[in-house]
Image 1: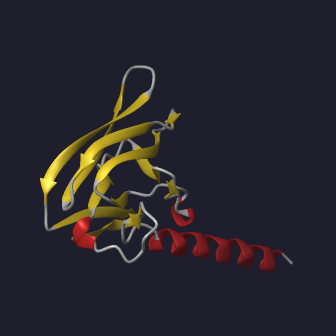
Image 2: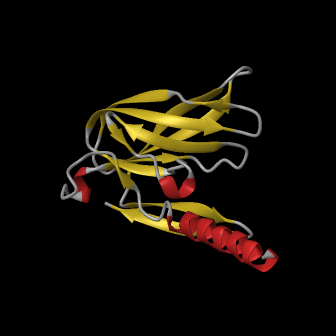
Length: 153
């Protein structure tokens, strides 16, 4: 009986680790039209900051909550125009669920979200990194070294 319980725990751990390896490989779509050309989109990405966790949980009315990694979606594709980005921010002590409005999003641009601490709450700001052909993020894969994933326009 003890053997079966141990095997069940091992199987659950392997499944959880396997699912977390699938998440974040490609940016999720922050819009409904799956056939929209990538060249007419922009990327919104969370900055790689080891002291903070940033997850993009929605764009306008579209959820980008990714169940495989607990909602820590690191990047999304968005359409040009005004976009409202919903976030989940956390560190070892706090959690905050703010939103940001990015005005006049332009196709081919990358918008990076940086997490900060105001003294009482976690905050988020964005910066336009400009037009790019591609953008690479590094996904942590504990205990292994981070793996690189690249999105192209």
